Length: 379
Image (cartoon, rainbow, N blue to C red; front, top):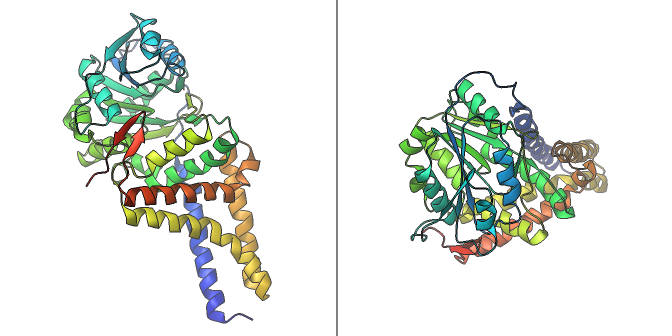
């Protein structure tokens, strides 16, 4: 028989795990959802400039630009900033002139991340009252720009950002991405961003729309020139300036396939792990959290069976049901199969490896690699 203090300690840890796991569910239920708006009337709409930073995007860019051209928003300017592409990116944009304006990115200055420099270049050429920064791998419903603008106006927001539906094609995408959604929800406390009294701040660079005067007030991309996670940093600048942020999930209006194979998936998530601002303590804490909140709870049931402890058997069995049901639910919510949610221990293993690699590379001061460019870690 186990000592009482051992049983009580394990039960207390299980309660903590259940609270943590429940946070993701609560946040998901609180996340506002943006749907298709009603048909437009005779109201006036300000000019919006959509800025697409593109570097070697000839495969994805045609669908992105055609989706923007098809928008029902009455006054939409479209700018593509080419970052020295070596494929057919420029030709894709030029083929859609004059509806699409192509700008060649000037030489990248020291201290700038390529996407930030491209966004800054596009913003300086834009003539819209609102600026929409969006990625080349996006697919758009024809009403998404108008829906985002109208919602932002109703909320009197200075920055509106939408979370897209993630399209998953390969086994690894279906295994890993539902858990990625959970971690973004909990780490950034995404729905709390919509509370003006909260200090939570995040944005999704796939679809980030800002009032031009508010964007210029915070210094634009000049203020975050060295940030690999530029969307989050820009949202933090807006929050610090006392401006209003709004974030919503828009699965019927916006979709993307973020990564197309396991290598691209690993490299992309590795880039997002710490950007250029590495913290060994944060990475180690993240690693311990993955193990402690996702793997170790699965050991309570066999531990209770081995020692004949009824309380641990009951609680351990409940943990198994709760954890697998939760991850199956998130897999379904992201339009995947619940079966992939049942494989969540393998998904945790993927992230354990990912964080471990990030930790080692950070300790060795390895630069961040993205789109063929190298970005050194901040001192």
